[in-house]
Image (cartoon, rainbow, N blue to C red; front, side, top):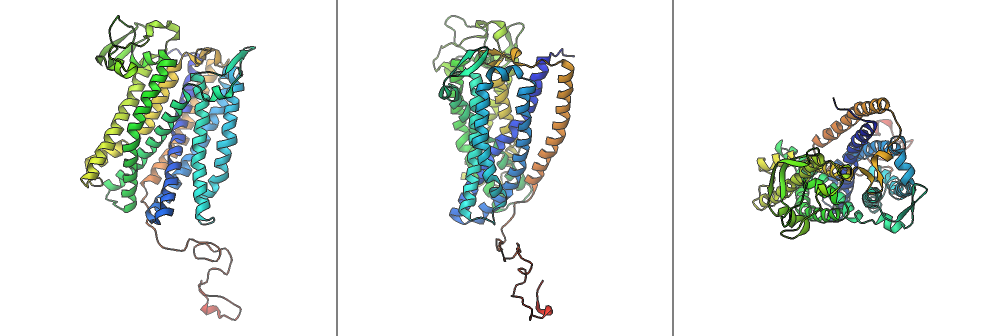
Length: 476
């Protein structure tokens, strides 16, 4: 039985709740932009397929958005309940950043979300498109502030320590800290990829069940174009992000690579497999490609990077975790690129919608975008340890003074409630994605006095009604 400390339980609890939470904002970011594209295409081309897809995914967006809000509320409370030391130390920096998120992103989304969800027949098409655009923009602004706050914890700048707390001195440096641009791009593109994979998997599921409608074909086609274009771009962004991490958090990169020691004149291999051992300070059963680590990380044939043994043992992140979380993320990314290339070849062969092997692969790849996001966040957060603010404040100094029993009880409660509530929610989302994509029926859009949406008691008859009209002639 593992011997957990209060710090361990607090970290596990935060990791559990944030892992559930990050799923929903990631899909919200991607779906909001996807809905904007669909509505814009409908207005430009007048093709009903885009309108049908908009309404199909709007319901899924609404449920996902709600679960994201609910799961996010817990995160804010945990800073005060479980991480009071961190809140006291950095509250004057992280507090305003989260406040800016509320003042910009939340207010923007709240102002237009209702129009987007329920205003299709109540406002003009231009205003409705604007509402969808503002909600999509709000999700990206929200991600910007969250990533600014988290990136400051990774590469802190623009502050000084006075009376034991961090005091902001330059907000420009705080927000645009060295890792922020790379992490914002990496996360935003990851959200788009996760959404494209989910949309593509839904299209593949319907096609495998002989539901070969134009809407299903369109959603699969759009998803594969997105994957083909964006997945390679994400690989390039990841390379730049890795070089930035090597510069500012070299211990994290050493742990990711399972690299313990440099030897004079010897290049760094890229380990494909291995079992890092923190106690024995070595990586067992390592299988690597010579020189490839040097080429990727230093862009030279024999370049070296700082090794784990260059850092004190108490300052090393847990390589046994992030060695594999990083490889899960990269491996799934390569599969995404492969899926995009395969889709291009099948499109050229006119087999994109009928090749069962490809459709099964696309279906299996549906959840991999979210899994890759989780693996990436585990890599970056575990890799920051033992610091909560890198190089400034240790995680052990940030935790609240709770006893093990209360943390264990609250963790167990979180597990039970989250698995039930969000398990049901995710099940409902999957149910919505299994529903057939609707076909447009040319009917009036509704409105005062029009069919399908009567606004006055006597607006339902097809012909005018007056006191002299015989009741037998009036249509119900």
